[in-house]
Image (cartoon, rainbow over all chains, first blue to last red; front, side, top):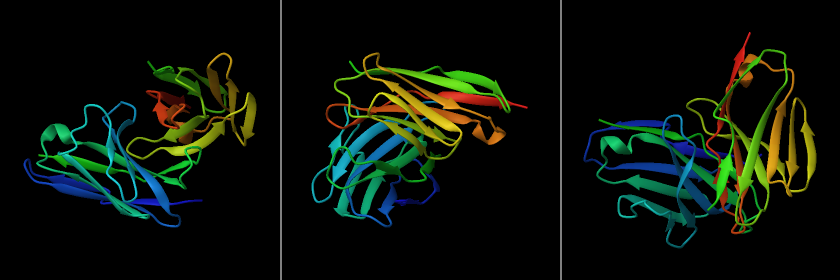
Length: 117
Length: 109
């Protein structure tokens, strides 16, 4: 089946610094990628949807200037958490959809655990 | 608004059967998904239902009733490794996945 990778799998950074997380679709072209955040014991929260070559669509309450998303190619999307704070510590998961159809299945990456000290 | 309800936590015994229910109220329906998520890991796909009825896949089965806005995931011959959270998600009219909060399943020997 389709594989989505994320890098890094975990990262610790100091408050005020920026962190970039990469999401790659390894064996398919992902027209659409999704970024989720998950706090302990809570469900997935969609942060933004990005289509290759266009600006990401952010969910209500998600600061687009703080969470920068770039989807420059059909196999790579990046999420940059700028000026990170301890409350940004969370599990970040990307998901990729194969093809433009909304009915296509989403494949999840393994997640990135971010800890801001 | 859109809403997906599932029990917060369930406990079952190794070797037994457990049914995890999910009810949904969404703007449109384009399929229902069940995912398994172990602690600290990303969700993994279990099943997909878009038509009414039962879909069986090994020890796992998933049922859907669109008229009732209801689904269940049935796990048979429970194993300790089945201890995880089980997430119900529905694709709405915009093909966006709406997620339930997940059901934490605890398996006891």
